[in-house]
Length: 302
Ligand SMILES: NC(=O)c1ccc[n+]([C@@H]2O[C@H](COP(=O)([O-])OP(=O)(O)OC[C@H]3O[C@@H](n4cnc5c(N)ncnc54)[C@H](OP(=O)(O)O)[C@@H]3O)[C@@H](O)[C@H]2O)c1
Image 1 (spheres, rainbow, N blue to C red):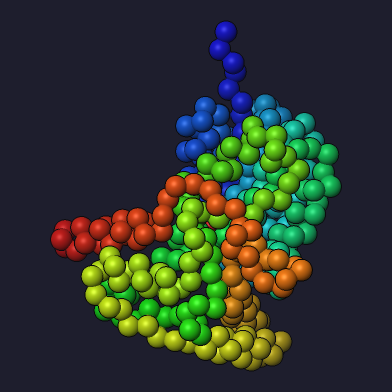
Image 2 (cartoon, rainbow, N blue to C red):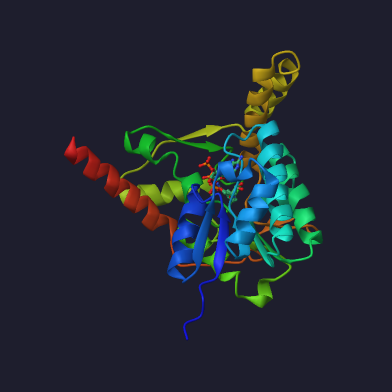
């Protein structure tokens, strides 16, 4: 007799990683219950829905979209905590959380909110896994279109202040889904990067130069500039609330301009590429090539 399909509730299924995870779950033979914003209106109804649908595990790729302090606590902490309580009430036995590697050195509101929820999840009486990925391909692709138009590539400092092991949506989604039936990943916090060596922003420049067959101008921005902007806006934000929001964005910008997305070695006080596990097969260079080809096709159609 065929085994009944296991039903997995997926929060954040409309997001970048969530959407790919929904496909990966279906391809791996799971039934997917997509949870949308309306499911978070009332905890009792959410619990009832999980119970009625026979959900055995939850994967949460949910995250604040705005990056504001209030939204971070509302989504990265409170909505996640509601989902966990509802899951426990409905007898769900497993919870896989997509978090972020940057929470290992928290300075930003969204990192504090994520950590607060990570702590609740670790104390919960179910089988949990916390996945902390490095940078997504999309986070390293924002400058392709300006560079293609002949503009310069912006880097902070000398372009080698930070590094990461970029991971594709597909590789990360597969990693999340394979947490469901891998007992070695139970009750663990797992940093994860993509395949290949760690890349600096200047390595992204080199990739684009190879693909475009021309040198690219690089504009260097002192990272201290963002720190000054953040503290100035922070002060003004005490009287003008919209500036407080911008101050948090500048703090986020400064964080990523100066901190690597690799495992932090507390004893040696440095980011350690070799301690950052690699997973998957997709390379950033292939992703850049796809984007450039897509731009070219679009250009021809116009
Ligand atoms: N970008 C990176 O390089 C990077 C690196 C490491 C880790 N991460 C982490 O990975 C996670 C996922 O990132 P992503 O880019 O896939 O996120 P994303 O595209 O912004 O998607 C966020 C998802 O959360 C949902 N959501 C937002 N607020 C909600 C609410 N109040 N109630 C219910 N659902 C809500 C969104 O639904 P709607 O469609 O309704 O808005 C969407 O499905 C984040 O925690 C991020 O910090 C990112």
